Amino acid sequence: MADNGDGGKDTLTIRDNRTGREYEVDILEGDVVRAMDLRQIKVEDGDFGMMSYDPAFTNTASTRSDITYIDGGKGILRYRGYPIEQLAERSSFLEVAYLLLKGELPTQNELDSFVHDVTFHTYVHENMIKLLEGFRYDAHAMGMMISAIGALSTFYPEAKDVLDADVRWTQIVRLVAKMPTLAAYAYRHHRGLPYVYPENELSYTANFLNMLYRIGVKDYHPNPVLERALDVLFILHADHEQNCSATTMRVIGSSQADPFSAQAGAMAALYGPLHGGANEAVLRMLSRIGSVDNIPAFMDKVRNREERLMGFGHRVYKAYDPRASIIKRTADEVFQVTGRNPLLDIALELEKIALNEEFFVERNLYPNVDFYSGLIYQAMGFPVEMFPVLFAIPRSVGWLAQWQEMLEDPEQRIARPRQVFTGAESRDFVAIESRG
Image 1 (tube, rainbow, N blue to C red):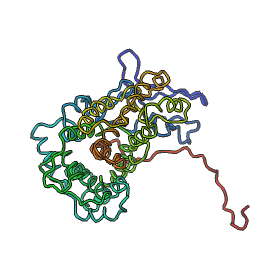
Image 2: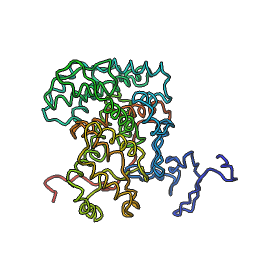
Image 3: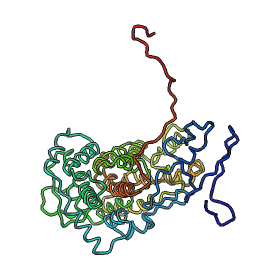
Image 4: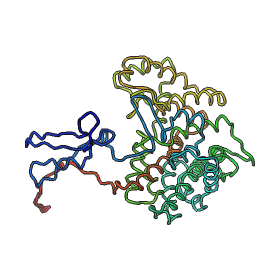
């Protein structure tokens, strides 16, 4: 047990008032104790021992990670130590992807090689098109994507060798490359449009926009402001520590499932309205409010808990989400190209009230990343059913970084939480003719 430098020990003494016994457990870096250390606390020697009970893992660390750092109280978000503000301003999405996956910013040669590999893995097998064509014309894009990504595992059976680092990297490149292609195909299927194949000379985001929107022309060049805006949004959504979908990726991956199957599960978690559907909920709220004149009545309902203020507050951030301020600036640039979104005035007034009124300030209801992202996506022509897909494309990088880190961590085993059983004691079976 180490000395903490002040004459004390980095330990915690726990007194069990049921027995009068005291136990000393180590305090690890980050002010945590090992849950297994609680098992020594018993009333009888034959007891199982004490467990911690933490529904939704609100105060439980399931891993050590050096990928993403968040200080919610100070509004800090860093990838591998680099502030999100610097990366969004000075980097590209694929450069940030390399950083998250490899741990360091790439040299020019490393970045060129990575961009080349991603670019030349964007095509998907023609049978994937047949798979997508099996969906109804109005199938939700995210449901199609979950199925398509899961199906990729059958095209690359070698992906099951997850303990081989070279095999892992190949699958990582494939997933990063093919996500925009499949997303664009899902979009085109929904609209009954012919599929557009990837163009290798375009950037990652330009290629995605090309596959989405090109109609009857050989050359497509998206507006550079919109291309850059999408790249910034991808950077902001690339990873966010141990959230619901990242945890799902880790849990599935802990069984040594292939990364395509694990990512399909992570995408299913993201599909939920409390996770990846939040920006869609913001747009629906703004549309329901309708005009600035209706805001006072709506906010009264929020104060009376008859309405929820979507896009404000966050499980982690207790200050202004650092991504929200970047997105707000990006929105201004996008609207100069696309025209001002008529819902923006409502959004700005809601933000003004929330940042200045004590009711909202004391509840830490600051705008989060979802508040403005939906307005940008809508202005760029994306339908709301594409919003979680636009989240999933960049987040695949974070999922894969988390998955790879989990596999390389010697402390990680197959995930298997405990439970507190609250059911019936042992009962004898009763024949059906004797029941009730």
